[in-house]
Length: 74
Image (cartoon, rainbow, N blue to C red; front, side, top):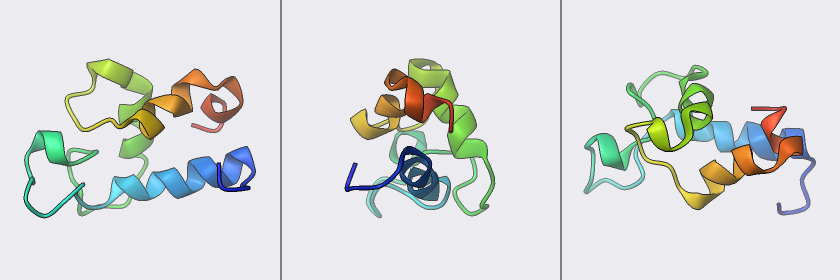
């Protein structure tokens, strides 16, 4: 976790609220939220949906649910 406290790590992961995974894929599978141009808590709502989310979820995103200490901050 890069030497970060759990709350710091989760907060940094929240940056996925904005933008796309890469410029060549701007479909639902290339972004983490419905509106990647608005900074809100939608990333965390999608993370809590786990595999039921239609948006991109990486192993790091899903790890936020697997670790109870991280999940409490999500």
